[in-house]
Length: 350
Image 1 (cartoon, rainbow, N blue to C red):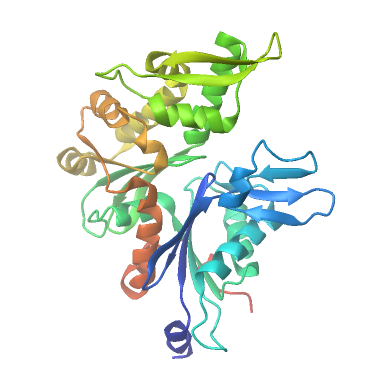
Image 2: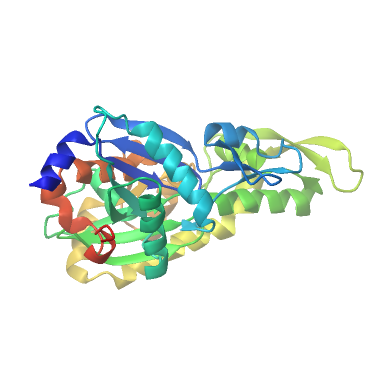
């Protein structure tokens, strides 16, 4: 009874705590925040200078004592205190107190499949310390499948691939549970670093992460494009030390990312090989679904379909699929509670 009273007065929150981008959904209001998971810290004082959009603008443009950092690496907390501050910032911005004595919000937070028990506890503890009354954890591919409106509670196979900044999650879901899951720590960030490495090796050009990401978005592809694309790549010549601009083609960028893309496709094929035959029959009829920002790489759906011989579709608005799914669980906690992870991580400390 007391829980129902609290839930009526608090604005509960769902968070997709991503390596590259964090999204926040508020019950009854929808998605209210979509910002980079970046924090700028003054190393002289230890104070946080900026979080999110403001912090990302500072990447590579700050004096030596101000460092813009990501507190999550490959979907896992690498700096507990900074993650806590980032979560606190998002929760405080999203949670508008309707009454003076409004209770703290309940928070559902998305986590990768492959995290350890210790890493799960770290996320729950950081979220509670940031101001949550009660914390629920949901695995990101499950949230993505709910966000994509897949019939996850039916006795049938659903195949979802969530490609984020730090991890690629591949999962087979049936009857409200994950039957089979793979977590690969190769995703959008690794493709950026592949482009940076290729620029150094092929053109002796030093480029930053933002430049690499712009090129990936601009002309990057996983499959041969019908129309050729090229784009200027600007950086510092490693031999002369002077600024230089060269023109790169989609073929060159695709080749730079080829090994990482191949690893993702191989993980998908391995998951298919391990899927029980009855569920595989359902998947062949329903298809494979791609979610997450990394799935926007041109031609990835074509490549996956070609390699697996199963039709592959992009979900609507793949970037927000996880937070929309977590939000749906938040709105229907009584009927969708079974999709959350083990109870021992849900209860607040006594």
